[in-house]
Length: 545
Image (tube, rainbow, N blue to C red; front, top):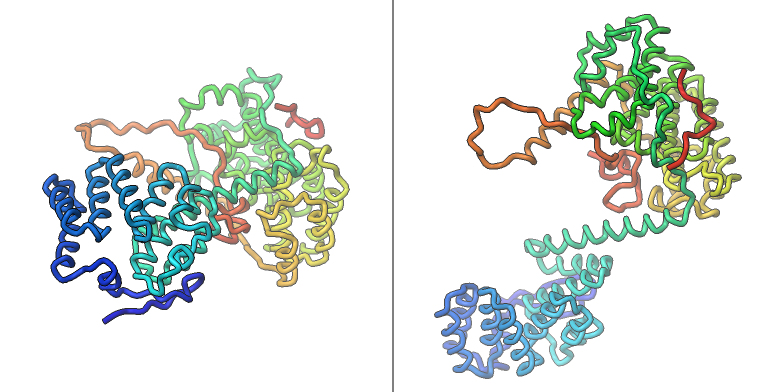
């Protein structure tokens, strides 16, 4: 029984069937020839010399049927004889220019030769099968799939990703169980992601920037760390696997001297940064976690002194923050900041106005205030005033002031939208009118207006006790290390009895964080989309005492 396919898009008006004898009359195919076609198709998938001889014999026997010549080209391709395959395909097209598969094969050949424009000679400038073969009123499903596949490859070669995706979706209406469709889909998705990243990069290049790239050498680079509480030395040899009793023991130390020691640890990380950086390849993960430890502990020791220590740390360079904190900066530091922010929003406001900081340090501060507002609704009026003042400041600032970064502004708008602060819509629109907010963060101004109209869409993150947070971080680290071991496994080398040696691990550049733009290119934050989602130290910030 013949199947007539119902399709969508630009294929919807075509008559597409699986009729096997569609071209029999045109090429004079009888029962005997049909059997030879089936046999030659199977032989063409091999690289046997006898197969090639048999196919050539049928070419001579049935010179008016191009399918045998087509199979000859396929056989050459299977044997890796690319030049002979191309020559055979060119000969087939020359003799049978209206044979659809000959045209498709030539188009694919030109695309493979990185000559996509030449493929249009075979596919037609309009890339429509009915325009290329106007005398046809019916097409076999295999013909349509082959032709459309070649058109998709053309779009891919020309980096016309949206056109490729649209055509692929239409092609799926003929049948979505083809592995090659999924392979094309993967290529298109990578292309779309790359294009969006390129577009975002180009957009950010023309927008305000604020950077503090290289860490300056401290005047106290040789100063050794002196601690009143030697118990804190454990922070230099342990990762996030501290037990609850160990954490409780540290927090039970006298607060004033404990804060002073933790501040000293953070100052030590600044003073000795280049020393640790030079030894980076020799250091284990555990030996670089002391900055993270100190910030988490200070988050529990509420007070202005604790907040100042954390802000001084966040005022360091991208080089410093990447080295000591890596992805933890955007994933984890919001929580101790949120715990410290209550009663000290004015100090965070001052931090957000300091020029030439790492943009993601300000992103983390905004996230902390956002989460504070979500966890403490009674503080929303104060949080709203905080964002109001900052938006007024940024709207009045010039890019040359280096007090704001486009990425930071985009993600801060996202925080405002999460809180549903509708009164700030005019100020947000003013930022968009100045063209200093990238649309890759929260969308264009129309999308932002729609989100304001929808109201708050809270993404409240869990605010854990310190023991719970350590348990959570320890689990994350264990999973990450297991993944590294799994990815690095090799064949058995006969060393099963050798002692297990732990390899050094250094922190990487921050990966995609919850506040970063989602890598799928949706234009949303990662947490809203695919989450399971050289300059001197700024004069406005002094070093720790």
